[in-house]
Each structure stands twice: as C-alpha cells, then as structure tokens.
Image (cartoon, rainbow, N blue to C red; front, side, top):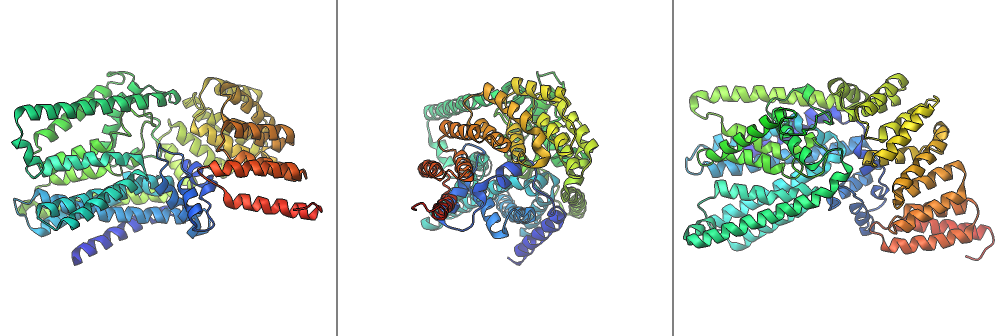
Length: 634
C-alpha cells in the first residue's frame, strides 16, 4: 500500500511540474463559444435551478455533455469568474487523477495476464508504474489538459477508466466467490461511471467494447464464456448469426445517422474514411516517435485522400493497419496484452476516426486510446533478469524525452502569442493556425502580421467565410479602409459556402463589438452580410438575432425589434431576443410595451430547457422601479 501511495504522489507531482508552465495561458478557440460566451455557466449560487441550467447549457454532441458543462459552471463559481488559470489547474488535477487510475488499471491487467506464470509482485508493480508514467507525461495528451474545453475528453477518460476498473474488480471478486452484494455494488459503480463518462463525452459509448475485448483476451475460459463450449454446433451458428446481423444493423444505422452531417463538411464520407487511415498512422507515430514539431493544436493541413492511391500513402496506411491488427490477432494467446493494447487503440477511435462527420484530426482524441499503445509497447519488453537494468535505463531515458517535450509544449501554451507563432512556424499550411496567428498578432498590435496571416488563411481555405469576416474586423479595429473587393469576396463566400461553427462565432464576436467606436465602420457591411445569410437560410433564428443586434447598434430600434421578434418566433426556446426587446423598449421609456414583452419572455422561460429566472426577476424589479418613478401603479 505504501508503494502504491508513493507512486500516486510521484505521478501527481510529475504531472503538476510538467504542466505548470501552461497555467498562465488564455482561453482559445472553442473555449470561447463553449465557456466564456456561454452565459448559462455564470452561476451566482449553487441552487438546483442554477446547476441544472448550467448542466443543460451545452451544444456539443447529441447528449450535450452535462457533466462537463456543470464542471465549467462550478469552476466559474468557485474561481469568481472566468479565470483561465483556475480552469487549467482543474484540468491538470483531472489529468493527475487519470494517471493514478491508469496505474490501478494496469495493476489489474498485468496481474490477470501473469496469473499463471506467477511473476514477482514487484515486477507487476513496476510495469504498471511505467505505463502510467509514460501516459501521464506524454505530449500527445497536452491538448486534453491545457486546451480548457477538452476537459470534456479528460472527464470522459476519468469515468471510463473508473468504469473498467470497477468492472474488473467486480469480475475478479465474482470469480473468487465473493459475497454477491459486493460484486453487485461494484457492477453498479461501473455502470454509474459509464453514464458519467457518456454525459462528459459521447465516445465513452465504446467502453463496453473495450470491456468485451478484455473479456475475450483475458477471461476466455472463465464463466460465462466457458458455457459456450456446452452449446451444440447449431446453437453456436444461430448465436453467431444473431450477433453478425445485429452488428450489421447497428453499422448501417450509424452510417445513415452520420451521412446527413457531411452536408456541412468540405469532404465526403468516403474521403474521410480513407483519410482517417493515414490519420491513425499519424497518431501512432506521434505516440511512438514524439517529435515536438509534429504536434499541433490543429491538423487541418492534412491533405484529403480522394482514392486509395491519392495520395499513395492511403493504401500503404490501410495495409499497415490491417497488418497490425492481424499480428495482434495472431499473438492473442501468446501476448494477450499486446493484442489488448492494439485493440484498445483502434476500438477507442471507432467514433472519432471513422465515418462520422467530424474534423479530420485532433490530438485529444488519443487521450484514452493512447493507453492501449503504451500497454502494448510495455508488453513487448523482455523481462529476464539480465536485461532488467537496461530496460529500466531505457524507460527512464524515454520518460525524460517525453517529459521535456511536454514541458516545452506547456511553456508555449503559457502565452497566447508564443503559442500562435510557434504553431504557425511548424504548420504554415494550416488555415486555422494562420487564423490563430492573425488573432495573436492583432492583440499584440502587429497589423502587418495579422493581415498577412488572415489573408493566408483565406487562400488556404476558400470554403471558410469566418476568415473574411475576421479580416474586415482587423482592418476596422485598426482604422484601415475596408476595400470594396474584400466586401465582395466576403459576400461571395457567404453565398457559396455553408455557415460553419467558426463563421457563427465570428459573427457573434463582431456583433458584440458593433456598438463600440472601433467597429462602427463595420455596421453597414455587417448588415449586408446578415441580409445574405438570411437570403441563404431564411428560417435560421440566429441570423435574425445578429441582424437585430446590428440594427440596434446602428440606432434602428424598430427594425431591431422586428428582427428579435422574428428570431424568437422561429425558435421558441431562444430567450436572448426577448431580453434584447425588453432592453430596447425600456431604453425608450415604453414601459407598457416592455411589460408585455416581459410576459412573453416569462411564458417562453417556462418552456425553456435553460430557464433564466434570476435575470427575469431583475427585469421585473427594473420595470417596477421605473413605473414607480413615473407615477404609474405597480
């Protein structure tokens, strides 16, 4: 027990030391839309309504990830605001806990595999320690820690590991004849952990497949699998047919579900599937040969595979993956941990690296799958006495490389400008990185670098409208003239491209700036953008809301009211337009009309999944005070 506690303390210490330089970094990219711009997370108390509202405030994934959203709200409450350092410290704490759970899991797995060969307990302990250390300090996990919004990933890993650990504890106790209530309690804890993982991020749905893989490889002769041998040949055939039919039906349903999402992507389902073969090999190279210049916040500079031979590395990647899987299958009895590790990695990527309409590549997707590759690598280490010292020295050497690489990356993440310039130097063909550099240079007041970088982003990605919007915003903020050609290019992009989440975020950011002097030159252009967005999609309530904000900033109160009313009519659960309407009416002293709009707001609030009771009560008080001061009856 002492040694386990010591290893846990060392893991926590190493993680904290390595990630400490990144604590001073800021919120970036998806942090903004999911956290800092999400008003539902700004809770002022710990009442049930506040916690429920914040947990329901997510918009990522089909389950909206309420566990992760609640954690962001609690971070806001206890840190007294949006302190990026406080959020990052929480992420580091979660990663430290995950490292300890990896250690516990590896103890269980190594004990199970070596149960017949009876190795020393000390050897199992050091193997588990080595795997957990390598995973804890590996640079591929950095974005799961310092990219704040990816707490969704690390929380999913936390509860997924808990699910597997509780399951294996229950499984082993069941085999050893433990009391049924102990076994049942652990199984229940495993199910609860799985639910928490699912509501942190949906890829936890793959955990039952990982557990099944563990069962097949490590418990093949145990009950209930031993009962299969008692079945007749006909029963086995029928059972196999049912499983195959169910698997095919599930696959067809998943493909059909995913197909609709490609309408908003610049690639087809086939192109994504082919490209992901190269992406998976790229991930493996990052895990096994961690070159600091190969890592990055974005990997949108990876070329699409349009066929098996374009580029030619597509077919070679597919052959390599099939060869690796066949090798793992061939050695499943002799080296079950190697087979488990390889299977763990590929099962862990079944959602995010196959046919679902997600972005092509992100490092944080390896947070859980990378555990499998590290386990597989350690399973190949020669454990004879004569080689043990060399093995220890080798592990220490690799740990120093991994730790120093992660520390250097964390140091880059500690400053927004240093992160942007470093990423751009290693990923010059990434449009997202060029946009990051432009924003960082703009904040630093370097207009030349800012404009050059955003123009480069526009060149690299002609299907993204957000870059043209940001370009105009930069010019306006610095008092530069916005060329007519740029406005025309912006309108052309709006007409021919679908609005991506980045485009919506850009519209939101610029909208919040329109009533400030630096952004005044953008008002007319912004209204023209929105008119074209509405022409493309006349039933999108968000566009009417943004146009209402622009009309309000221009002083056109009546058009603004009409736009806000239309935005709410199109989406009854959209409360923001009604708040804007009440604010405009109160500003113009139209108390009765404001009171009518407030009643509309209160009615809509009852039907909303994210009620705003506190803000509505504040508006009621303001209206009551105005009526009192004007001599009207309350």
